[in-house]
Image (cartoon, rainbow, N blue to C red; front, side, top):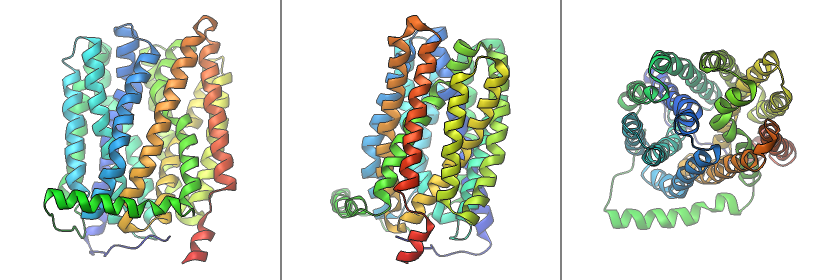
Length: 418
């Protein structure tokens, strides 16, 4: 099914694209500082918690958000409104992240983190669904690339903002600056981006009724077959591999490779530079050569990067693996988002993202839990327990690559059905 173009509104276009992309910068500050770096270190080093405990908490919060995504996505489509959902979910994440800076016990810290992660995960749904509101059919790849590229700039900005606090006051000092930065960099999107053709609000009961009926009808996107069903399978296995990398790479760099805090921060700075450039270039490649070809290239790079990281025994080898993983991380998000939009009609877009979010979050639960379980079960075989966990990720990404290559149609399918 080919994406339907929204009406364009002249000179507002570039400003809307830039403001939308800036939100990617904002939420990536949360992702790098809380999900990837300082909160897992706060759990495992400052409070003596295990990788499995952090994985379990992250998985529960992701599962909670995944249960809400299909319904909220359908509701958003019914109303043709994204901003009334994006703003509250972002504020939920910001407030909970700020509260983490005042938390002293491990238990309450995990609960507060779970709430913040629910807000973060839900916000991504509505942010992605806004993309057709700010990009045209010819430029949607470039706009997606700009967003992801600015997102990785957010990684660099986020690391730079909190680094002085962390080096002088410890890991928990990163939480409040992260919350403030997330809010400030979200403001351009909140103030400038608008829903193009929102539907009028109705009573709560009739709204829920209409949403349920629409959800049942919209499930035909997946039940009738077509490109979205195999893409679901690809999405599941690829996120089984990607999510543990996001959550545990900081732990891996310190425990297995032996980086200290300074080396780890520098490592993430430099690898993120690769992601900034690759995301922007991936947007151009997606518009020129197609989203599927770009995504296949990214998946191949993932397999090579995971294999290199698993076999790395020296620092320079791991630096190379990290650079490759950073490169393909950015291009994966760009091409995946565009491919979903090109497979979907605009009126059901948030619902499609919601269902994909549900499947993806299930993968994001299973992947980290398997990682934590492998590390814990084979802890007497350190560091091979961590390398074994990476092997699991490599297998899942190889499966995702095969599904994408053999089962998911590309742009030729879209042309033949138009």
